[in-house]
Length: 114
Length: 108
Image 1 (cartoon, chains in turn red, purple):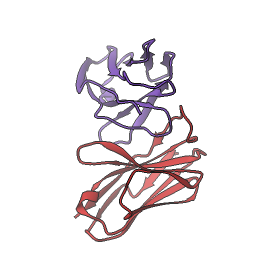
Image 2: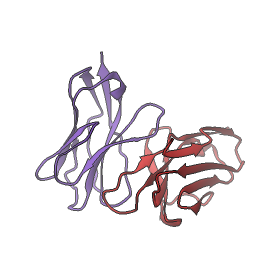
Image 3: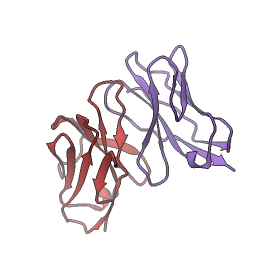
Image 4: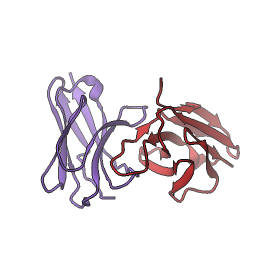
């Protein structure tokens, strides 16, 4: 069983559309994250939720809206998609938000905006 | 979070030990040293982390200097499948900040 799973794996969409990426973890973790890896391969944190509460928002445009219906799920909704949103989006989770925790990543969702 | 410095790339012969260095001279007392790797087109994979003491698991060993200003990740018997970008990071909380990492190429 995949510990952190994301869907869809690949997504091609037009500018201006609204799309969502879903993430689920079956590890029983309290904390979940969204990271973005751009064309230059830099991985940057976008959001983090702990027990469904937002704890990190790294000045991401408000077109990006994460939603955590329960602590096993953290979905990413993106409104009015722009060309610059093309990237790989990684969901991740950790046991808690404390120090020394291990963060486990999903396999990524490749978003291409045309 | 402290900044880390890693070589851009390294080569290693298959079956030999791969020693990947990392400098983190501004690390704070409560920050852990983390190592992840990313194989092409896959999600980052956790390798190992430590605070002060050396650590070993089934994947690798982590050697942290006594002053904690640098560390070395050791893959004892590198295989072709270990070719990846290796990221060294320090974190005092739940937030990992990825740098450029080291591209390790394991050669036959």
